[in-house]
Image 1 (cartoon, rainbow, N blue to C red):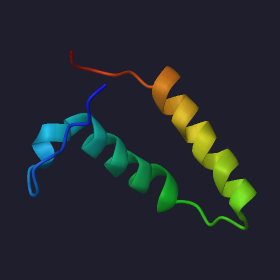
Image 2 (cartoon, rainbow, N blue to C red; image 1 turned 135 degrees about the horizontal axis):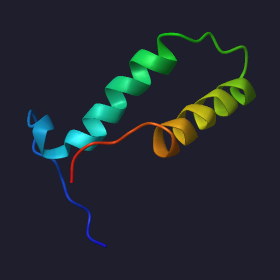
Image 3 (cartoon, rainbow, N blue to C red; image 1 turned 45 degrees about the vertical axis):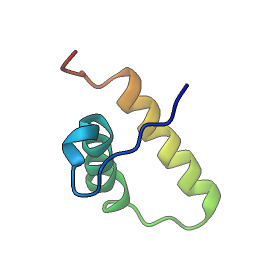
Length: 60
């Protein structure tokens, strides 16, 4: 697998990543106060599983 670089200032080249990053920030990082790293890992893993299995995804 070859690594693809995204041109600086061209977030549309990686719409899926940009979309996830925005949702992750809005729905997790801005909403949580983590007491320690273990709690952060558990909360983030729960969000990741929910995002990848439960949430409806649209597009190709």
